[in-house]
Image 1: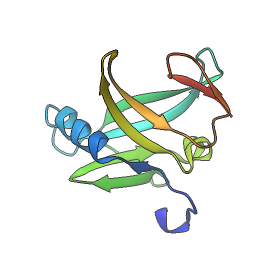
Image 2: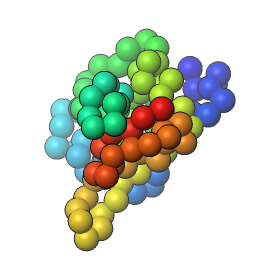
Image 3: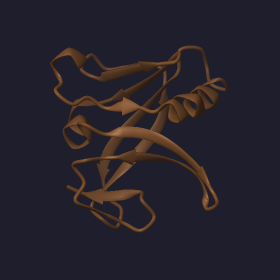
Length: 113
């Protein structure tokens, strides 16, 4: 599926390193699934989960030995995004730099398209 996408989702080096650390404590073959769901104070929010199976139409992003999955519905909202990991004074978190988001909440967990 990645061959047909104009602007696929990417994973930063920092995020790949953190995902590898998380998955090292999970069963062999585990992957990180990132999806978009309704909710949050801005209307849409990201959901993260560890899975061991992928769907046929998932976008599979492979980097540095890890795999991140994005389903096709979520991909419509996330096309062109970069998944990053930030470690700063206010804490550690995954952040998605989404060029499609026109507004977001103060905590950075929800957004509007």
